[in-house]
Length: 348
Image 1: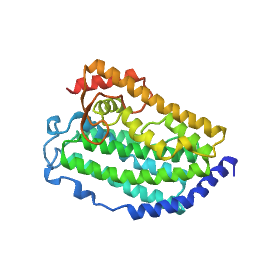
Image 2 (image 1 turned 90 degrees about the vertical axis):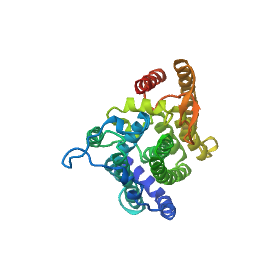
Image 3 (image 1 turned 30 degrees about the vertical axis):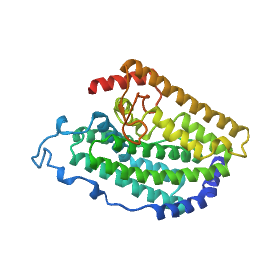
Image 4 (image 1 turned 180 degrees about the vertical axis):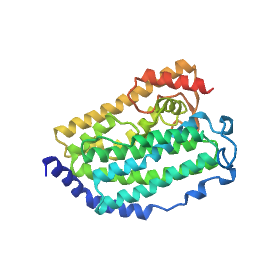
């Protein structure tokens, strides 16, 4: 066995008691729910094709374009579950407590794609033909993270589950349909429990491997992108989603990165060596950069829009505030902000 393999096995073995404890807590807190009860079946009608129904047309959707985009991105992200399961099972294992968690998580996540698709079809919320074409292309590419260590993988899912919770929650808050609001809140509740599992497991990893775990977290946040970033046409959809305030730099900073670092007590984490201290400094700088990006985006939108607009923003309800950039990616702030404005103008 190579030295790297020994190190991986050691991390997984040391964390397994925590996985067992947190899985037991999760099973006690989780409440099974029935997806079919959240779908407005009475609103559904046959589509064109073998059943001879009515083809979809854009005017059939009562949802704003940005909410349609958010539902499509959220649904296609959930659709790629086979790739995520393979990735996590390969990295964490399929036996013992790790395997039990991976399979339970997969079973719970599988509900999300099924119920989201049923909802958008029943409500005729999005183009079903385009949706299926995107699903085939996106799922056909699979998912691969290429993260170097189990601690990096654990850091990624910790951040990603919190970001996913916020994305579902804010999509629901922006949705004018009561059934959609209820459904997205239900899915967000699942994602919150998944986030708590990974966050508290990562806290234990920080206690056991402070330097390596904090370095992994800094690496992940520096290059973070949502797993749906490979969806065809993601860039334009992300710009419209950001323009609506459903998920943008401010949301990412204020509801994902900052609370995560605060809960993990990164600023006061004891026992760090030189590598851990460097990682802590990087995390502080990363938070500052996110704040600067959001401020520049607000300033740019204020100039381009000559005022404020209605947006979801914080995810706690509808409020009025300037836009604050697009979903985390690699474009410059100005380019992403301009793209969001153009997308908004095209929607108007």
